[in-house]
Length: 188
Image (tube, rainbow, N blue to C red; front, top):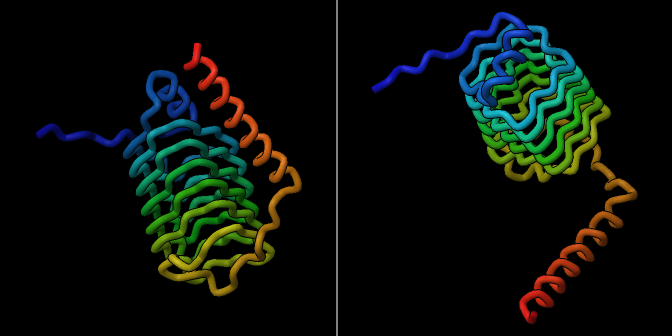
């Protein structure tokens, strides 16, 4: 059986250089680094270690971050979208004003995290632990019923944006048009 050695990164530049060759940071050790404002998109980051890192103003999107260690990480004003953080360690994470959309937090540990001023939309929280999480002035469109431990103070319900109904109607019209076009081609 082959032993895989985890990649240890000493700088942001090393990470960026590595990403030019491959989109895989699984198991990588990036702990303690200043990665503020970085854009990490479309990556495999399973089991990566980012504890005590600075990811303020970062964008983490379309990434598999299952089992990632983000304990005590600074994620202030970060954007996390279309990402899986299933089983992630977010204990004590500083997530003030973070924006999350379509994020899977199932079985994640957010004990003591600060989600103040944050916005969470379509976030899965099945069996996630929100013990001692700060949520002051946060908004969420989240079904908290399946969480292992809900936040003591639930965020305010998020109002859907005014453009959402137009987007839904437009999507339905587009799907109908594509189906009609497909039927027309089938007849020809």
